[in-house]
Length: 135
Image 1: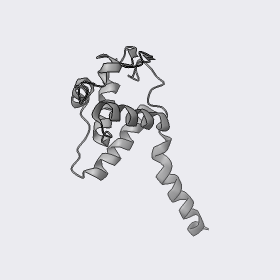
Image 2: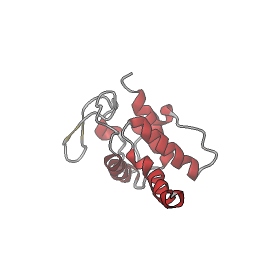
Image 3: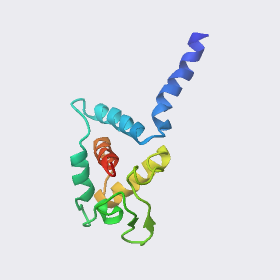
């Protein structure tokens, strides 16, 4: 019976990171991914996350180009001019609650701003910063 249950338990354990429903669950996920990528990883840095958020890259875009320098405020997409709800979880409790949405937007926005995917460490640094906004 135990041998038959083991594969099911393994699948459940592997899928647990995808069940993140709280912003801090994403930090745990990115911490694990960062350690896998770099065993010397020591932790996220909210100050670096802030710097990353406001620094223009490539086409002179930064995260703050659309999300404003204050991620607790409503932003506006730089191209479409569509309104963007606040990014900081303290100002918008719906942020960082759904794995599919979080990964979709990190992928899209990192490609727009950096022309590449963000690393787990970059995601964790930015999220650490965002969690500090509005406190």
